[in-house]
Length: 136
Image (cartoon, rainbow, N blue to C red):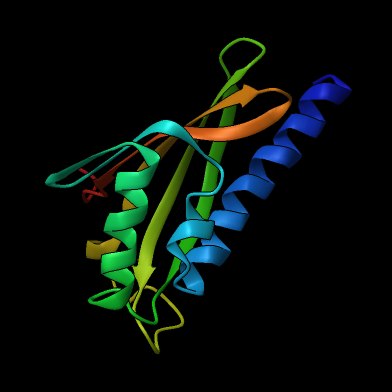
């Protein structure tokens, strides 16, 4: 990996970590600060189109069922699709208020993050998750 890729990996991880920290503080605006304006988020049963829609949806959730929550995140891999695009695969879960670990596999999801480098800055362009299924 060239030095630029090492720097890119560090920058991508910083973007994701900033988003995770913002979730933990219930700050929807900070959570989507590094999303592209036309970002999309697909979660089980929902499609959120655009950074503003994602922010609005998260703000409502932080005031309701996700109040006091944080997330568990484990990076599975990062790969690049050209110079200015990256795909991150992770395993994630919501930790509700008072939880310090995921209580069971039923809340774990596999997530795909698509990031693009815009004017030298990595931004989240798309997010999608799907429940982790038990092995066959």
